[in-house]
Image 1: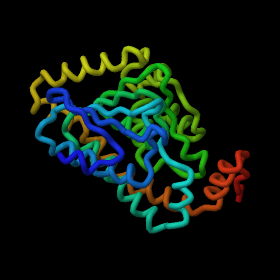
Image 2 (image 1 turned 45 degrees about the vertical axis):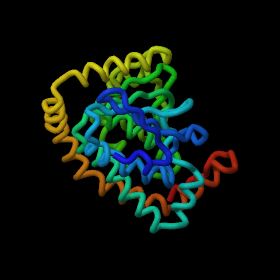
Image 3 (image 1 turned 30 degrees about the vertical axis):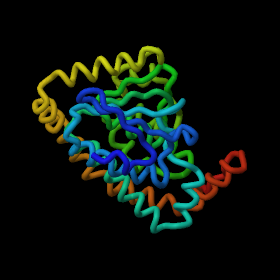
Image 4 (image 1 turned 135 degrees about the vertical axis):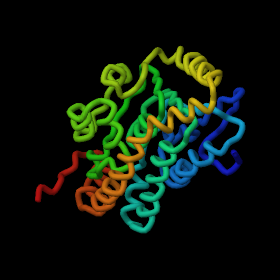
Length: 264
């Protein structure tokens, strides 16, 4: 794996454990432009990396990932061909995570929002600092969570709860996320690194092939759901990106006011 191909992420090897850090702390590790494109390559490269068996994902700074970027949303609205490129990348991100047969541990050091939350919940096991929050606010900017959130949130926490959070964009704490089954465990931030290191070492000591084959088998229904839902979700997101409500949501965010949505 050529780490030099990645400009928005850093990599650290510790034995057979490879830690990938989203490294744009000044942007709260949002996925836009190059970082979104690199994320679409990442899991296909990781599965071919001969020097690692276990993958850890985390973020630099105070956020895991803040998801999207308002200015980038405006640019995508103004350039529909680029939005379609992002649609292809979004499908590659989800499919890459589900098809990567190496266990992926998500170390959520801070807020995981939008696509950031999607990356977290598509990981195999998720450990979070108790200061972290999870949320998918696509609907608040008149988009739908077509990037995969509508697959994993209901699958993990049940449809009733998931619909509430996906409809409203309301954030939930790491402790609530653990209680609802969205993540494996929340803990004090000071304990997170040591806990994840120990857990990664535990997996790394296990038989590599049986771990991979177990994950591949467990993920069969998830891959089937992704195949049936991603095109629909991304198509609706493409339509919603061109709707006047989306333009109004972007303008309201810039002008620091409440949006006035079209009720027709």
